[in-house]
Length: 174
Image 1 (tube, rainbow, N blue to C red):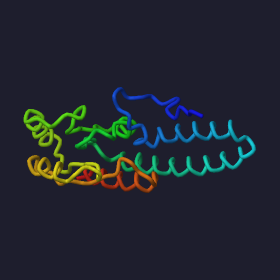
Image 2: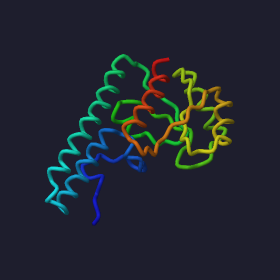
Image 3: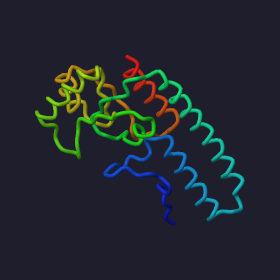
């Protein structure tokens, strides 16, 4: 059985990180639920009940983020690896990646980022908790930023996305 989890998702070219947006996760959950019902119709009510509960939790998370964003004007954040493009798109934020297309960070890119950081008053560098610190810390130091680890591969989606949002909100509010 193959399930197209991205059905009805507006994909971003060259960005496979569709799971970083709660809006997209809602569509994925619906797609999976429909597929489960197709192969196991006897448990339709069970799947629909679980979907309803999960969508309510996602809606609560989305509502919290949208409420918090109402008072935020500068919506830019700096991230080492551009894993939150869908999140940024769906919440009208600007993700500024250090890394571009998996290539090593150049002096030219660092110079450009210093200008952007100053213009946008960015204070934090978000990075995957799975990325070696010896890669991140020298760049954070060079850019005079505080490195903040995040999880772009959450096992407990709701809780870890809440955690990501609280960290990101700190950058956007300061």
